[in-house]
Length: 178
Image 1 (cartoon, rainbow, N blue to C red):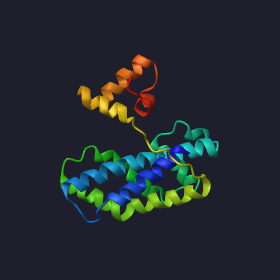
Image 2 (image 1 turned 30 degrees about the vertical axis):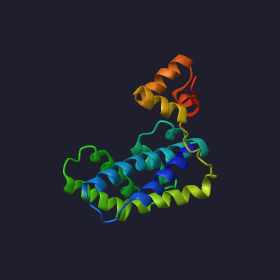
Image 3 (image 1 turned 90 degrees about the vertical axis):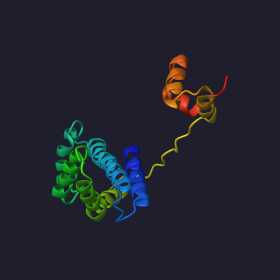
Image 4 (image 1 turned 120 degrees about the horizontal axis):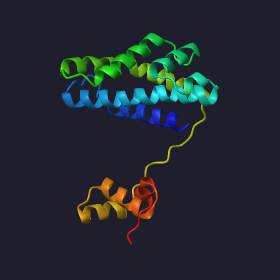
């Protein structure tokens, strides 16, 4: 399941890059943003697993709150209240304008939430087979062309994709100099 592989990768990145107890503005901003993305991957992994692997129709279109409730009822997550708190914190994070509030959120991520994420990963490791995510490739020719022309990479990729009637992903990975 690609979603699970992305979830594991995002978790490992946070754990690897976080400096525990560093509450400088840069780390607080980076870790809280990364955690918000991790939370998204967590609930969407639960959603996909319950729909595709357990055949739960209610998981197909459920909101994060509904998915967390279903996951708790299925025994996928143990403490539904903490997961709902994570959801609330994730939602509130977009509106945090004071460093002092963000510091508390980062502290909670380090001391509580990452442990719950690890529990979820461990649960899924037992029920979802490993899949290797292909590392993203970017055409060296495309990068060079972007620099030479002074055109942003995304703009050049979109233009080339339209010209060749292929996906932007294909251009980013396979574009060659004419």
